[in-house]
Image 1 (cartoon, each protein chain N blue to C red):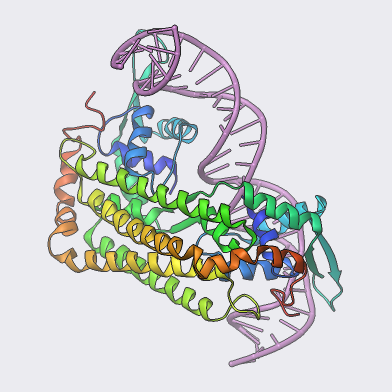
Image 2 (image 1 turned 120 degrees about the vertical axis):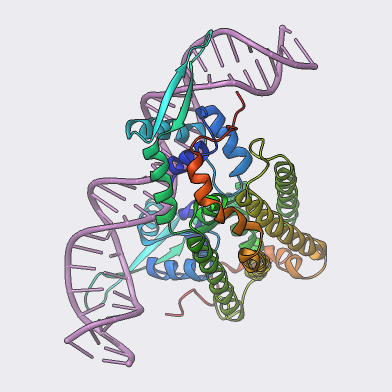
Length: 199
Length: 199
DNA sequence: GAAGTCATGTAAAATGTTACATGATTCA
DNA sequence: TGAATCATGTAACATTTTACATGACTTC
């Protein structure tokens, strides 16, 4: 599953330009699949070449002509086949968690900042979802799938935010603070007693 | 932040070979940062060339010689600097959620299968975390950061699993089932009334 | 004797990100 | 008049995945 597939998916909701598709992605997928112009435009070109979408240029006064893409029958079938054949992966890539894993090597001040900023980011994500949840992608209101995905986002982000807040609260208490305060001491050590492998 | 940084991070816990590092990644980072041999070995070669790690080959009876890597002072400093300079991103890439977004285009049977398999996958992840939580990376037990990350994983995966289960339960009831039953009807339609853009 | 683990690496392919280039229209 | 939005695209770069290549040792 790649950006081409997502473009096909977006076009199942109606004809659109690359620009429209980017906006649609931002509204609907941004929390679990990112895509920018740099991948969308090449994807649309390839899909056109493969006959999965058709393209109608629309003359405009000036600047680049808007191109309206629509699914062909072949494209519609291809998308269904891809959906049926996709093994659904689900992976997180979090530099935030990497940073937290090495909390003992971070100055306490930065550690607090990292946590606070992540809480703020989750808050923002939650607001985005709530905004998107009320107004659907088109006039029909959100599809069942869109509702499912929004519900998932709300649930998971809510839990994540609560966890971060609870940890943040006792940062000046015991848990992580203890590690952070040891930063200087750990630094001295140089070589640790035990390696990954006792070898 | 890339695989090179993660390798430096792994080596802060002690000297190791590329093979060891891969295992360490699998135990500790696999839920929020994936890396395979194809990225680890080149990373270690570059780090060596840059003088951030040093490498001691260890003769063995046969097969490729094991190479023990260790952080240099420069590498240790570099890692701290990278940590301090990293803006902590946190992104999810989920083909599972894409699939669910297009639930109305999936045969109900597959939809149920997808949900069940994802629940099973989350269960497995939770077991991995619990196993890893009891036994730390080295003899000292888990660091504060490792505990934080495990706690995060438990919290979030627990919430996600509970959500999926609740949705799965009423699959034969209302919510998603309604959409799935409409699959045939939607298929007929071809063009939808409303596009992404009302244009 | 088969399966799994230990152990390293390369080359090609896939995929995505970033920066650049261009320029009109619309709103405050 | 300045900022934002509309609108498309390319080229270079970065990064990762996948498949391949090799081969002994250990455990069932």
